[in-house]
Length: 305
Image 1 (cartoon, rainbow, N blue to C red):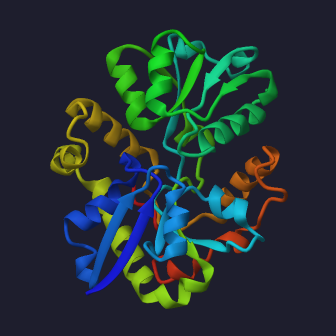
Image 2: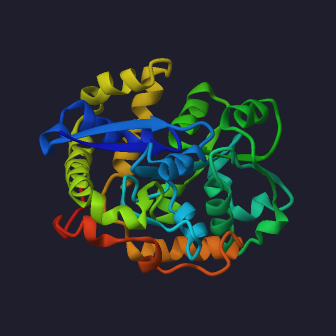
């Protein structure tokens, strides 16, 4: 059996299709053993790619984008998230929330795992005519730390992953004002990438991987959450089962797991956001950071909802 090693930037609910594919033997059915680990700090994925410990990294497309044109030539070949499964949580009055209400306010944007929570939020502010510089962003610290501080009274809003946002709703310490899956629309949140010069070497393994992942996405979206509960409990044993179920259903219904194909238009919009934040000197093109050749064999129509 061939082996594919993945280093991920996190262990997250939005990666569930990969865990499901492994759990039910879909990778094995393609003569593939997938070994996956989450790196702490997340930048370990780059070290693992360089050392050969990992064949593939799982994380944000903004990483290959920032390195575009440099000696570290990274290319994405598939995605596990077709949308950004994040939310903006406020303390109350979500129904009256407007983006302009954040002017002169403070937003907590956890950044220890990367810059996407801030960058996506800044892009949404611009889309709604609000200058991001009019909002104070607290960044670079962990999600648990910022959740604790927010619940203690710091800030006016906080950017969170779906599971953490749901946990605050269930505790009564916050309400979801904006669901980014619908507010942003289609866009590559979490992608699989590798060194470009390894694509041909890995092609057979990557093709088997994305074929299994594609099938897993359809199964995960079609399976009632009760049927996924054993897998959810296995991966998040300390999470409240009802919170975990509610967060899983929200992602199932959001379109996040619709396709393994990376959307060119969604990529273009995301690159424009990165350029506006000066995270890249020039917005890279789709062809610079994505190779569609690994998913080319899959059916063009890939809506799994």
